[in-house]
Amino acid sequence: MPLLIIVLVLALLLGGAGFALHALWYIAAIVLVVWIVGFFVRVAGGSRWYRW
Image (cartoon, rainbow, N blue to C red; front, side):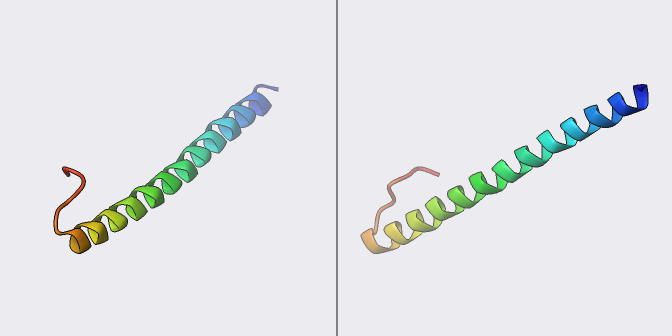
């Protein structure tokens, strides 16, 4: 029985970590798109609209 509980706890922890990493990939993709759009807006307009 304790082995079953340990396996279930490990499955929950690894599943949560997998979801967090999946969400981080989505956040990274959104930030990349915003950065690319900002780069092209700066090139077209001549001034930048953010202060990074």
